[in-house]
Amino acid sequence: MIENPLATAALTHLDAQGQARMVDVAAKAPTLREAVAVATVVMQAQTLATIEAGNAPKGDVLGTARIAGIMAAKQTAHLIPLCHPLPIQKVEVQITPDLALPGYTLQATVKIKAETGVEMEALTAVTIAALTLYDMAKGLEKSIEIRDIRLLRKTGGKSGDYVAE
Image (cartoon, rainbow, N blue to C red; front, side, top):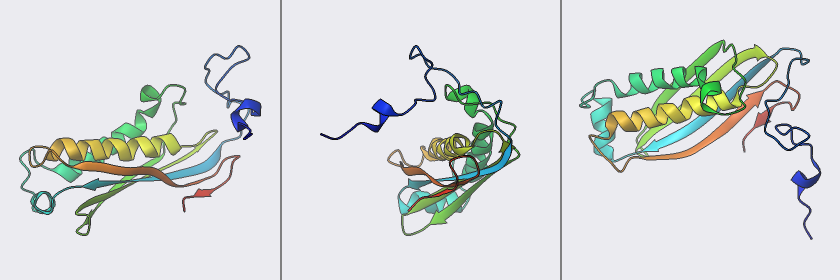
C-alpha cells in the first residue's frame, strides 16, 4: 500500500480544527527571494505576424499584456486566498516572439525581501499577461492557446532554491 504523505505531514494552511488559515510568518526573518514563472501562448503564424507588425485591432498587444502582468503580481493577495500581501520590489514581464511555435514565450520575474516567497506572484503575473495577450488578440484569432504555465525557478527562504528540470 502506498502511504499518503499528506496524512502524516503538518498542513500549514489548516488550524487544529481543520479550518483554512493564513500561515503566521511574523517570526521569520526577511530574506531576499526571487521567483521566475513562464507560459507559452501559441497562435497562427499570421496572428503572430500581425501582432509583431503592430496592426492588432485593439492596439499595443504586448505592452498591454506586460503592464497587466505587473499589475497582477501586485494584486495576488487579493486574488488567491491565504496569500500574504507583499511589498514587492521588482516585477519584470518579458514577452518574446517564437516563430517555431508560432507564438510567444512569457516570463515573469518577481523579487522581494520578505518573510515569505513570491512564487504565486510570479505565476499570477505570467498567467494574467498571457490572458491579456489572448484578450488583445482574440479579434484576430479565437483559437489562441495558453500552455505550460509553471514555476521555472525560485531562490531564498527556508525550503531553499528550486530550479525546474
